Image 1 (tube, rainbow, N blue to C red):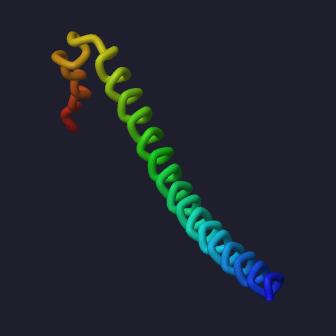
Image 2 (cartoon, rainbow, N blue to C red):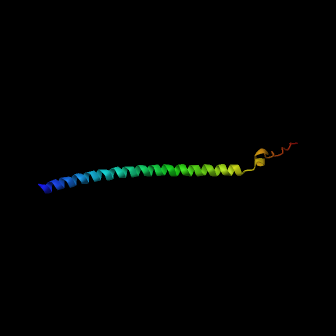
Length: 76
């Protein structure tokens, strides 16, 4: 009788541990999804910062002076 009680207790403990493992695996999968979103957000931020720095590096005189238009030639 005592052995049956020990087996039942061990089975119950095993079931609890299996449930905890499933919960941890689900949490790990969710964390991986969040990691991927964060990686994409970081990459986007880096690209945006790079473009902003590239725009800031353009001298103001280049932005203020438009390029000359080609000369029109009158046809005879």
